[in-house]
Image 1 (spheres, helix red, strand yellow):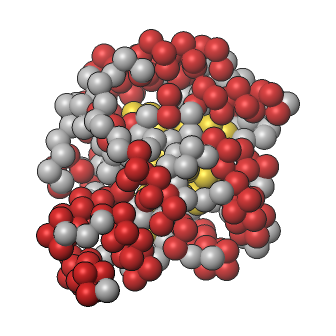
Image 2 (image 1 turned 45 degrees about the vertical axis):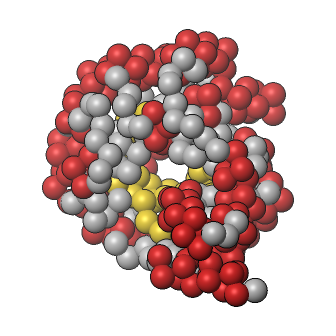
Length: 344
């Protein structure tokens, strides 16, 4: 860990666990990436005023995603960078970065604009693409986080190995990510105790709320030693949403942690700015079955389409596909599973 990166974390972290709010990043999925500039400004200033010291913004899929995916944002990356630098005076702000969607030059541009941390997202089964981005971020003096997406694919030993590799690449903190919202609190406690006990790098947790356990799982992660926890105002986020910022801040207070978070101000910010936003429909059955089968929501459209073609129950097909491939199920694999269901 570089001296600059270390100082950013040490100077700003509370004694117990630090909230990293990603309302303006993960929450963008829920509004079809259409956050207005006014909303961005209100959330940034409100979070900073409530004591949140790490704030993430931008496209849900990170830097350059508006150019590389079909999902354009209402406010460009360049404009987001400008707004964050203009609005925030004490909080650190950063953006997500998925290698292949983002290129190294995008990281350089963001650093030049004042970005103080980057979150490199990679599937836990393939962490090597993070190496070049982490190396550059270290050279640029930016605090580095790695988000190990789909952490549930591996057991504690495999997770620990992935964490160690990311630490070797230069990660200051490594996040364990419940991308499918399928963990139970006991799972999270065990995972953090086992992994945390075998690695030297700080750990973070990013939870989804498929089973309405994101906040409980975040508390379990904190009790298990997590140093950072991701949250969003009103739980807004992809699919079933995320850990609720205002509720988690209040939980830390109730737990007795010495924090500077004003949970009442966070609740008012959530109520006045985020709750009124028009959101995409969230199908609860899909989210629940996705959590139980540990199927990522990005695969729901493919499985639904194949179920309709084969005239089989979509949720039974989801479970069948999960038994075959939870990483990147190809259409041929899904159709084959559907045909097998028909044959039975």
